[in-house]
Structures are given as structure tokens and as C-alpha cells.
Figure 1 (tube, rainbow, N blue to C red):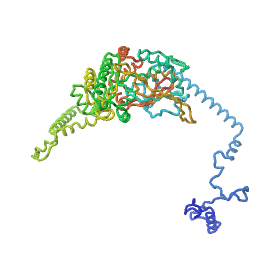
Figure 2 (figure 1 turned 120 degrees about the vertical axis):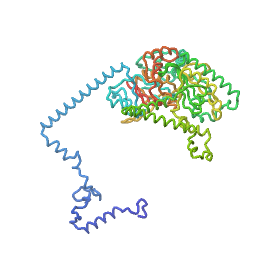
Figure 3 (figure 1 turned 180 degrees about the vertical axis):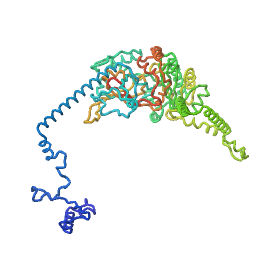
Figure 4 (figure 1 turned 135 degrees about the vertical axis):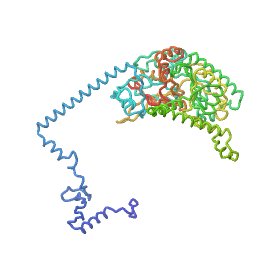
Length: 598
């Protein structure tokens, strides 16, 4: 034992085990029985016993491993083949053949019926259904041709047993994306190595707002010039300021990207004033274009918050609207001091839902008792307000010790009253909505706001980034970066080739819609996209209106006909937002119909 390091002190060699078994057998005798009359475990005869073939070792067989106990044992096979008469075997074979034939016919008829139903429903526009199931971007059966369901249904729709719906459009996502990853079984080779003429045609079409109509099915995408320069046209956007050595999006939480870079304006006050002067001119130009319906929307990205300005009619709003998020109590107080009227839509929605739940609970109560309770609650609220006005120390006067106890100052009392407002800071619920003429007041506030530009740090003295789909004064034309890769993804039986197209940069809502419209015929209606959202902008999908009037939608499309976007993109952006404070995470197209996950 000592010379073999692999044995533990409690381990016994096989020879020791056999010697102990023989000793136990001799001591118990041939007719050994236990107390309960049950014969103990017997290891069975040796493999080299006289009755067995020669060549075996000293191993013993397992008494519980009997070949006759298996399902496919020789004895059971013999009984199954020899026990039944020939006539019965023939009848069973005929019956089995008929059953298989009937199943095949039923499956063929069912597939034909589903195919015809889906072909009819592709010509109808249904209400979009969001995908709420946790489905991965690279699903095992994502590109399986046998799958016939055109849309992945949400759990609510499945529970209601509603018929399959064909979603020809997906909801507008007003959040900014930093990256898009398209995947498809079809190749993206047509999107790479554009010719100089194709790039020039794409730039010219973008500046002139000219859009070409593509065929519904493209057999050879690489040889379609309209597809290639149309793809280059979709990647264009306008930005101010433009510094080639700095990436000016995103700005929130981007201190590491700016650290170590050359920032000559950080210590030069005159240079900072020059940058802010040009930035103010660009912002004013954008608002004028927005008011004239020549620009659909634009973004203002500062180091603390993001502002989205939208033209009248977009997202169901009647006039010009602006969403600002995230905000702080100090910023909201400064806006109030400037006379800007705003609302907190998420807080108002929460309050309305609470009121609806309370009213539904008290529907069965008597009206008189309800009035008494309301008066009682109002009196309690008034008493609480009175207590808050004097800081909650009125009871000290009754005891006569108000002079012996030091009261907190007015600032601490005010902070305690506004504790609920302070808790909203930097949260999605702090999103601010400004509508109508107040947006112009907000514009002047942003131009004159000193806290709009960082006073210290890596972004000190740098004006906010302005992003827009159309040209404006002082803007620079930029192109989103693209990259195509062919990868292998794991499926049930092994691996399959999946082509991918990556788009990086500030992706705006119209860009996402234009790319999906372009990839629909190019990828034969089969692709998926993973969307990487700039999280502070996800709350910009807060709904402004829950109803949409078809006549109002038509008028909005006509009014924004010269804003530089496709008509289909304007129709999508004019619909009321339905994503709430979330954003699209995944988008799938299957058989020319959409499904998504937010």
C-alpha cells in the first residue's frame, strides 16, 4: 500500500476482498440464511467456471444483468415472430400501411390549407403584435423552412386562441441605437465594395430626397444597382459639431472615450464661446426647419440628458412636441422659473391607473358613505398640509418647549417636502414633455442654459451633439459604418452558415425603417436584427396619444411630404407610440411579416 500512492488507506485490494469473501463463506456454511430468511447477495459463478468458455479472467458476472430482462432479447424476438399466425401478421401489416397513408394525406391537406390561408392574409394589414417571449437572436429553428407560422404570437394572443396575424409593419422606436446586427440565411455580399458611381448616386439621392422603388423580389441582389446605392443612401445622417478625432455620440457616460484626446477648447474661453455661437445658430436653424415641416425631428445629446424635438403630427401629437430625459429637480425648477409649462407623462399615467383601480374598488359602496369618506380624507390632507407648512412642530407650542428645541432651517424643510421629486432624478419616470409654443421657450432656455455644457472633466466646453435626418445650417454629412461577416451558428444537428451585417453609429428611427424596407426584397423576406439601444433614450417611446385618426394620418403624411423621408417612414412615425418606456430589442422578419421583442 505504501509503495502505491494511488491507493487510499481505507481501500482494499481485490485479493483482500476475495479472501474476506471466502472466509465469510466458510464461516457461514453452505446453507447460510439471514435472520429474515432471505438469501444474501451472491456474486454468481466465475467467468472462468468449467461451464463457461475458456479465456475468462477472475471476474464475476452481475446477477442482475440478465439478457432476458431486456426489451429486445432473443427470446422475446422469437416469441413475437413465431407466436402470431401468418394471417394476423399480414392483417397487422396492411392496417399499419393504411394508417401511415391516412396520416400522410392528412398532413399534406393541412399544409396546403395553412399555405393558402397565409397567402390570403399577406394582402391584409393587421394590427402589429409584439413578441414578449424570450427568444434568442440565433434560434435553432430560426431559418427552418418547414415552419409555417408567419408571426410569433405573444402569450396573450395565444391564450385568446386568435387566428394568426400578418404584421406588415413594426412600431416606431424613437430611441437612438448604437449598433444594429442583421442576420439572414441569404448573403449580404451585395452590401460591400460599392462602386464610386453607386456611392455618388446614393449621396445625391439623399441630399435631393429622391427614392427609387425596388421590386418585390430581387433574384440577384449583387447585380441590382438601385439596391446598392439605395443602401448607401440609408446610411447618411447630419451632425453638428463635427470633430474627426472625437466620436460625439453617445455623450452620456462617455468620459472614458474623451479622456486623453486633444481638447484645445478646454482652457480657451474665446474658443468655447465661438463653438457655442456656431452651435446656437445650428440649433435655431433646426427648429426653424422643424416648424416649417421640412425636418421631421432632431436630437440634442448633452452630457447629462437628451432632448427629442418632433414636428407636429408625429407620434399622434397635434403640435410640436419635445421630450427631455433624464431630468433632475434642479433642471425642472429652472424650467419652471423660465415659464416653461411641462408635464411628467409617466407619473400622470401612474396616477390615472391608481385612480381607476381605486374607483373600480369603490363602485359597490353607497354614495353617501363615499362622500363622507372623501370629506374626511380631504380634512386629513388639509391637516397634513398645515403640519407641513410649519414643519410639523406645532405640537411643540402646545407643550411650551418650542424655544428649547432647535428647528431645522427652511432649506431642510423644503427638501423633506420635495423628497418625492428628488427620488425621480435620473430615472425614466423623470421624462419631461413640452408641447406647443412652450417648445420655443425651451429652445431659448437650452441656448442660455449654462449647465448644458460641462464645466469640468473630459467634455468641458464641448457643446451638445445635434443629430438630424436632413441638412441644416452648420451640419456635416456622416455615414454609418458597416461590416459583413459570415458565421456559423449551432442548430440541433450541427452548424449552419448565417450571414451577418453590422451597422454602427447613431441609428435614428427613419434609418432602421429604411434599412428593413431595403432588406425585405434583398433577403427574400427572411432576416433578423438585434438592436442595441442607447439606454437613456429608451424612455423617449412614452406615448403621447393612444388613438389615431386615419384622416389625421393622411394629412400628416401630406404636410411632411417634403421633410426628406420616405412616405412609408412618415406613416410609421406618425402612428402613436406603443412601446411605452421600453425599446425594441429584437426584430424578426419571416415570410415578409414582422415579429419583435421589446
